[in-house]
Image (tube, rainbow, N blue to C red; front, top):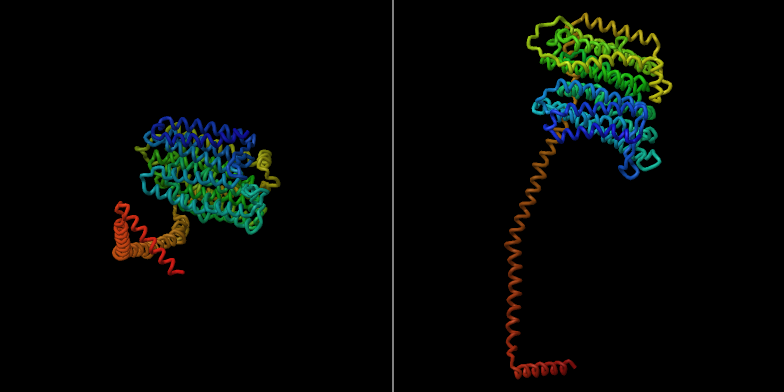
Length: 619
């Protein structure tokens, strides 16, 4: 059983590293290798989801490396590998042969492997390993076209923002280790043991996990990094921002639900942060004129529902939302990438008639957008209601906030559809979308329809049992009808409104279009003070430390010169005098040494005479 789990994580990691090491020589074979690995990983993930294997390997004394698959991690492992396979299928057909394919597919496999490690980790150190590699490879993928300074700057922004939030996991690990909640020295680092810590360590652990999760999932106030991440290739956006990196934080919160509940405050903070993100980033999505920016803001908003579910204890609803969102959002990003390649633009006004020009892509895009809007009978409609039932049980106000976010989902989804389905304009220079890139979109469109089934009994009850989430609140029929009716009205209103400007004040529209000014706020509150501190430290280093070191060096040189001129001259004179005296004594001592026996006898007589006189006088 452990071999199955080791193979699941080692196969994509090893193949990704191999492609990166071989480099451009493997460009031709890279798509085939990546697809074969993705198919194998999907088969292993499905098997692991049924068998629930565990694996253990020596790591530190008392702290082995532990991986495990249970209901939640099994479902997510299947989702990650399935979306990875579909995205790689699209990339194999769409990615130009002149690109560095080995680097691209190698990074994609390495990223998927690190996500699988994150999902199956049973302890914080192993989780941190996968978390860190996932962040590093996401930086490399977002900045894949590294010759463009704007893309590398966007990759840096995304990496540094998430990296700052990732420090929360180190805080959580340190607090967990200090708490000693487990029976052995390191067992407190197990994810299952975090909720057993005592105060104040419990609050530190909770705060660290929440900050790291919100940062990785682009929730408020970290949402702006996802806007910058849109500079990467569309397949990267489809993988990173649908089923992997940005849902990793939501997964972590769903995984550590007992910790949030035990803290006494973590569940409320998480639930309301998710609700606020769903509403505010929904408004940001409505204000966008760039399709990928709209989809990015909608990702933040949709993941806000998952975070809300984690805080409300609606594990089943949050998991269903995660899986359904993965299918819909990866389809939307891939369709946007196909139009960008074919039409050379992702601006909504320039995409008029894009769906009419490429009917199959347009139809698949429509299915995903309608699912995102929460219209029946598509997957996200039912999944949202399952998680909102948990919000309603906790607080009517939380339910109302979630329902408002769902209405905004219908508005921005309908707005995107309005542009792409308007009467087509002449596009003589439009490129043909390869058939190989269309079929993955069709598969994802079918998934958007089929994934509605798990949201209803008896499949929903089976999902709850798999997730070990007993006592989950079930939505009533009126909740399904209410959300569907409101979504339909909101979508119809957005369609009727068309491309007219939003009925908001100019400052409000500018704020929503600029992602609430979060990046500027981060620069003002964090980046600028840090840079000022760095400049002050550099000035202190230049003006104080450097001058002190240079002054010390100059004084040392002057002392050395004085020592050379005065002290060493005196020492040399003394040594010379001693040597001269010694040589003189030596010359005097050599004079009696004539080699004549009678002189030695006379010297002995003289010496004994002196000795006798001394003895007589002393007495």
